[in-house]
Image: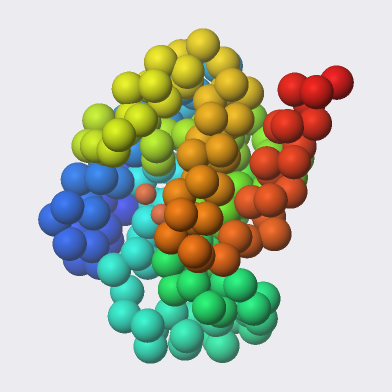
Length: 189
Ligand SMILES: [Fe+2]
Ligand SMILES: [Fe+2]
């Protein structure tokens, strides 16, 4: 697949740091897709595009929600950090005309996660945690776990995210809670 067109669009829409991050997530998503027998070309594309509206001004994102009839729930409305997953999914579907539902859904849930994630959705979610440009206290633990199993890495990532949000006294999106409850439930069974 030729990704040149998408890289050009990203270069215009993203700052340098975010562009480099997008390339790194694409590489990591491809690596994980090969390791876990998913479609590696699709994973690379999802990685490239996942943050496409991350640097978009608030006004542009509000226009995207309005134009494509998207209603935000209250927690999403209150947390601008969550907006780019929703606006990004709408952007790639309606403006870039990406028709693959797996790519659209992986982008849509790459920040909150959700219940019943597909392997492909987990790969993008985790690639965002373990890409080469990432640097946070537990990144080495995450990189080890993601090579052991997607499930163990999801459990760690969801715990990490929920702890971080609680420490900041930030709201936790219901999709994240449901994703967390699902991995905990599996653990306890
Ligand atoms: Fe993101
Ligand atoms: Fe990202």
